[in-house]
Length: 189
Image (tube, rainbow, N blue to C red; front, top):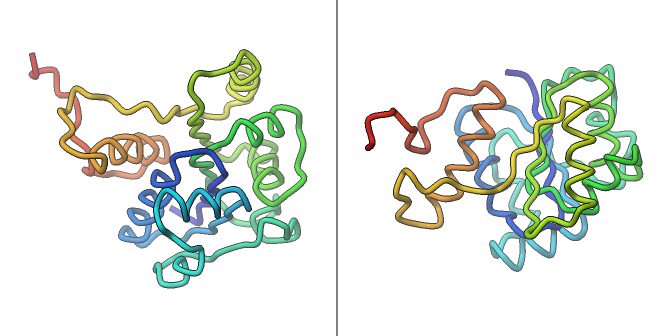
């Protein structure tokens, strides 16, 4: 797998993005990471994580969300996929309206026009009608909508198990083999 863009926006659930980055790093996959201003606050509050810590993660290149000339925003760049995890309602709305006013939204729109795999992980609950309509619109444009709704059939024992369930589903969509979460076999009942 080539480079992947991982965008973390300001919705609650920053731990999903951090865990995805950790797993991809362990697998030796190169990532371009974009963090919105709101996400910086969420990372600090929910995960006690400062973006300077990305410098110590193997395979991570941190890009400035204000730099719309970064590689992530280029259609000619060799990038395989983009994941927005978590995806805020604001980012979701901008994408559905075609607004590329920062590196996250510009890169996602480029991913759509280039037919790259685009996965968004909304974390809003409950969903407003506008969120549902925006997800429908993006889904009709081949964007994968993967809500942060963990399963419980694997009998999670910790928050980490719940996070790994979602990260495993993201990796499956990226066609990356993984065993970080227990899979349904059909023999459970």
